[in-house]
Length: 66
Figure 1 (cartoon, one colour):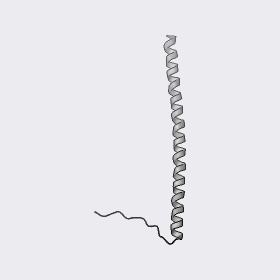
Figure 2 (cartoon, helix red, strand yellow):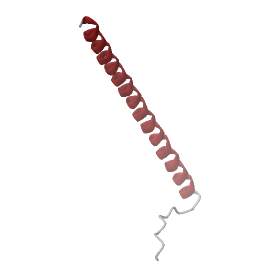
Figure 3 (cartoon, one colour):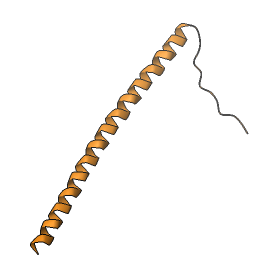
Figure 4 (tube, helix red, strand yellow):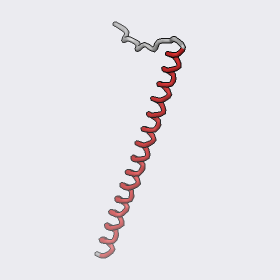
């Protein structure tokens, strides 16, 4: 009986550890995506500023009609 209880504890402990690792990976992934998104936005803003300073207008494309 003791062996069964000990096995259940180890299994539960492993599940908690996997959950913590998964949470850590999720947090890191969110931070990376946020950083990449900020960098991408900054790059597009810089391109738009440079185009505008050269007299090139940035227009939004319209959807094609069918």
